[in-house]
Length: 637
Image 1 (cartoon, rainbow, N blue to C red):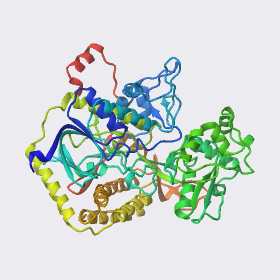
Image 2: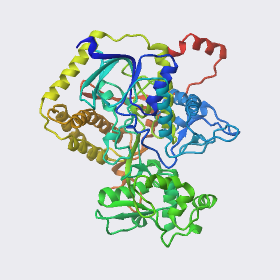
Image 3: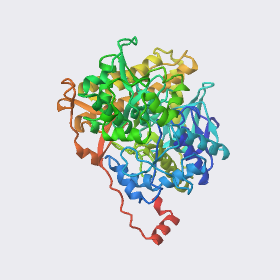
Image 4: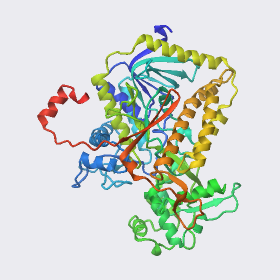
């Protein structure tokens, strides 16, 4: 290929969610020029299209007399297990800087008249570190960061879908990427010293999902290039509405809606939870706790996460549809018989009204308005729900500067970076994305501004990729991308979601290998532009789902039930006397809480390894010495 056929950048940012936008702003602030954002669209990612009852940002405590410190927050970030202590410390230490950067850009986090940013407790949080500016916190972040990108005149190329990451001949570093322009179908080549990879979570892998439909994720591109992953089996799942995808956490549960199921035609209505609880009060208390304990958690079985299992049985095993009904209370709801925690919360919130809807109006009117804007009126309509994939705690493995552990100059940030471990405080993902953006930008500014890409190797890799794409374009299409995607999404939701079982996963892996081989050999000739784009997107998605399933199989083999997943085993523990003999839990091997599980694909082989989690560093430093190391750049060595 000719030198004129490519665009040259110092840093290419792939993705325009909150993390990618923050990275671009920070790069510019650090004096890094010749950068650009390539994105499918500024309004296409998860950050700008998702939220929850009260979408949370987790940061260091900043209110009142309650003491806090980076090391204390790091301990809580690492407490869930399978987290490197040094990375947890960085996420804690930089949280005030990242948070106040957002505040300075206009994100309306609440503060009192003295300028203190108030906090509240979130899940897995012993202090009041969480904050929120409402159900659309991440959208507010994106809007403020997008304004900053435009103010700084950072180039943004929309309508671009990445189809290939390019590496050197040894596959030791990235050198650029190839995109397809979704407006004209052209393939565009970008050579770049660095790539900040902010492609989001694996939203396109699941059939039952609360990821926005416009978001599919791009982790498969990095896997194909040789990037190492960590803790891929650790994901979050929870109850969410499916007509409009939204988590039904917090007040959606705390107002005690009726759980109703019907047959496929919407007939034969019944309150199915009643068959699992000895008293109505026990059922209502469990529903209330789902507000606090929204993600499915193996540690809450027995406990509130049984509700997720009961919903799964109703929807998946019995083929029925499940709804939340806010319109009326059943006759046996007696507030005086509820647990003290449930009753006190509703009393102190002045929410002892006579229907779930009225209680929700008191607690959180915007939660009702949200659905109304999407054509769902909770006053008249029941809300259809399912247990959905929501977040990947694992992802690509990065070092303390968020650079890939196996591909130099690749910086995975945001959800695609797997820094979270087994469980995490609610809202820590938003903080981690901003901290990753700060760290990657700082390191690039300090160490990666020189051009070191081997031009000959780049030309060879780019030409080979373009030739492969040309061959696919010349070959008539013989598969349907919608059917192909539905196939691996169904497979992931059946075998690789929150209920996991050995034989199901083994069969899924066999079928996944067959499908991936088929997709690699497919043609895209004769298709419409959109169909060509989606067919190309299916290949890295399908590759990713094979590695995710391998990771699930590894979990079943050596780790057991933990975090957001329940492993079923004939020899396991009975989880509820109300369930049949299938529902026995494989216990957890807790030694793996002290380890990271790494995996990658190299030369077609899937490789697995473990590493002991690094401890939280002891940092009893001396100012003069740290000042010297900072001035002289030793901190980047």
